[in-house]
Image (cartoon, rainbow, N blue to C red):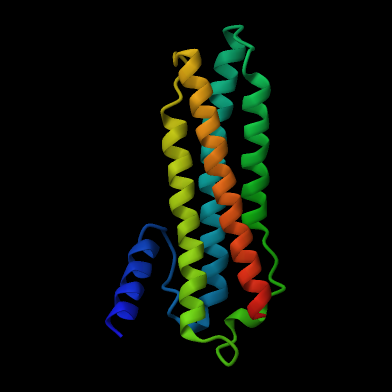
Length: 168
């Protein structure tokens, strides 16, 4: 029982990192909270994409065109993931019906959702380390790292989609 209480505290701590989000425990606001959380996650990805676009513009203005294709592909992936998260289907409305879903299942869903935030923060942290004057080898390594982080984020979101399809 103590582990469950600790898990709930961890979820509430995660939620405190997202401005304007009510607690998931407020039953009447679960769908609204889910939508706001996903909008926040998508906006954080858009922030990372904006940083990448500024970097791309800087490289292109300086005539350094070697990595523009890679930067553009990464930008497209960030946009696609942001859209996927923001516009995830509500076809699984049953997940929020308390008659069908136990509290443990909701906790798992919330933990999955909030782990997405951790992945996005890691992507943003890597993006901030990519400055226009970064050495070429470091640039390549950062692009690979961000791509791997994005792969993990996509995998986490697929887990969420699978979880929702099983419980609805």
